[in-house]
Image 1 (cartoon, helix red, strand yellow):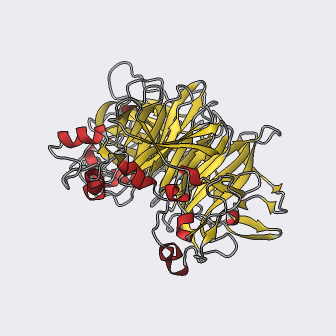
Image 2 (tube, rainbow, N blue to C red):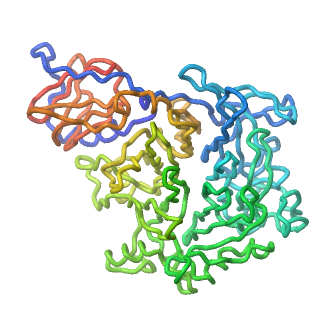
Image 3 (cartoon, rainbow, N blue to C red):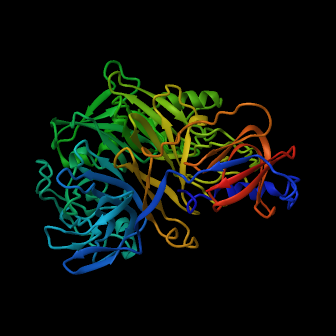
Length: 594
């Protein structure tokens, strides 16, 4: 499943190889070691949509190459046919494009399952466009800024988030490379009473959550009543009224919109979260005029709301209704929120606790927040806590002792229910390579996707299960479960030097979670003494019954890789065949990768 995507094992072993004394070759005919077989992985990876390669339909008989920088993935089930439903993919980029439209972008397509494969379903839309992939037309809402995260509602409605915060028309014009029409914009068709007919600066018509029609690939409305904010993500509760929202900013504020009527998001109230409030933690702010919509941050500060360090994606555990969001972090945030703190906004409890442990204050330049975290919010109690801290902290990231799991700057977040068990799906977007986010000497910001079994009430980094990663230069993002068997994932902005198609942003499917049938998430169990290995075919990892130095040799006895002080290693880069695994004591196991 990950053979084409994961290269972490290669990068790690190269740094260690020169320092460990393993013979460059061994005589494989001199012994008959125990044999362990690693079956073919039950997980299957399939590329569905490649930016800059596949064409999107922009008019009748007219198409153009799709934009790149794939980010959020939405999914809307089709209950009226045997097809699975409609997939929507954000493009987190700014481009002047006469056919697709200036600014950001989004693509819609329909999928079906044929056997164990996902196929793209050809369609003809109501506007006459025919094909496989369709550009989402934002002209009716005045185009979008950079399309980053988004929301999938309980009934499959889709909102795309405009993260690209700008303060002037010249900034969105971007020298002609961004939104070229910067004339004032008159709002129409939103269904939001205070916004209809209002004329605003073009820059004040970006940075909203925008609802789209995924079936017909057109925009519906911008949610002016949710406010103009540097949105990254959000989530809608099962009541189909409560919308949780966050800002990718320092400070970022946690807000919610509560609709007057379930399913009708054109009317309702807006609130900001204040962790130290007496009574309800939610403070209502104004959202009944365009001036209100344009002053959400100022209102949040005036309400002395709680500040966060870059809020990213939201997800609600379907098993409990508890809300989670990623706070990706900023290395040294003091200069970004000290003024807002002085004006009345307050630091989140976990930042105060972290600063105290560092013998400093969040407003001090000495305060660091390198790795970020996943936050948990319980709507029944309004209590907010850190669910899982990133890390561990590594002042020196020695490749020879680098931890098996290191979570840095969590960004994408979703849930997947597999055979009745809820799993949190976390995706990294590294803020850099320093402070141990990758091993020292590694030049690739390698981003990974992890799962966590939510039936375990005691989260810990060593309990995360690594599922996949992305090629050199890329961010892993967008993960969306379309059912209990298939997860859609995006690979964003990979290195152009990667082999095709991994030199383009792309959307791929990982299938086989329900049907693996071989203990997909089982931890190894060892019995007896001596050097033992345990194959996990799903994630293509080898586990050892002891922490040891190991070398991998091919069928001809030539050394392939060396790893030091490890309990497990990634072998996705190894082609099927026979290998020999040797530990520091000279014990050897024969490994057959099918």
